[in-house]
Image (cartoon, rainbow, N blue to C red; front, side, top):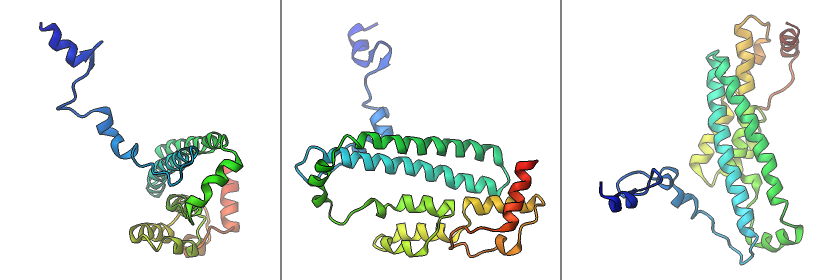
Length: 210
């Protein structure tokens, strides 16, 4: 065995030469991710602010990946994998909440120093946050307007707005299993936020008492 050749290609059994193979960085597209931070101020703390929000958007992307699959599974009556995905969504929400502990190390004066460089940008404009709201049933068509600047984003949000929410699909599934749900609740205006309905309350009470 050529010892010198072996040591240039492996280290303690780990492959070292990726000139012809996909590497960790290639698979994760780290060149794109790690060069996506472009501070607009000379302030040291802006990098924290950017990465906090970028990582939040990545977690929300995973949430939407799971939530859209959950909606399809509930529509199809396939609940076990839907429950597992919802458990994952709950963990993602925990992750999002606890991640703010890192941003809390930025003091109000430190944030004030970078705020002028942010212009009119705001977390309120997060299209993924809006899509999560819509797919969970908290719908408001007026909130689409802020996304008209980006046609593909606007179209995706409009599609989610006009489709049944996860909760709508759950209620429809209950009706298919014989629960007496009001007809107007099964065919509402999907663009409106979820509203209270007595037949749905009675159905859920039956479920919890079973």
